[in-house]
Length: 76
Image (cartoon, rainbow, N blue to C red; front, top):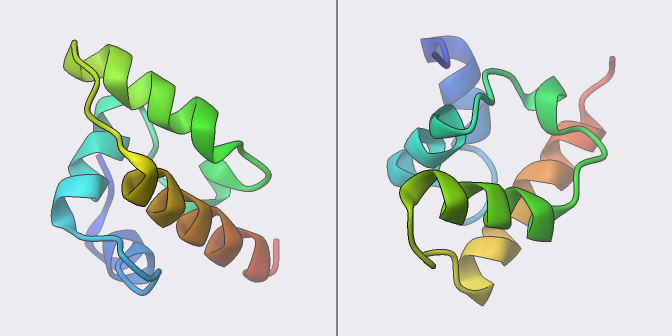
């Protein structure tokens, strides 16, 4: 589960909202550091598999790219 402080940091990424955060929780993401260097398309595919349907469109993938960029900008 993503704690409140980490959730607040994630929400700072452009186009990331509570629903996307719940999707990330579905695939086991708990911290921004979990997605540092990740591939947005792969995360989208994992979310689609977890939800049991094609859900992530190009805007969702772009939002994931924004979140990955935020994760990369935070010092280790």
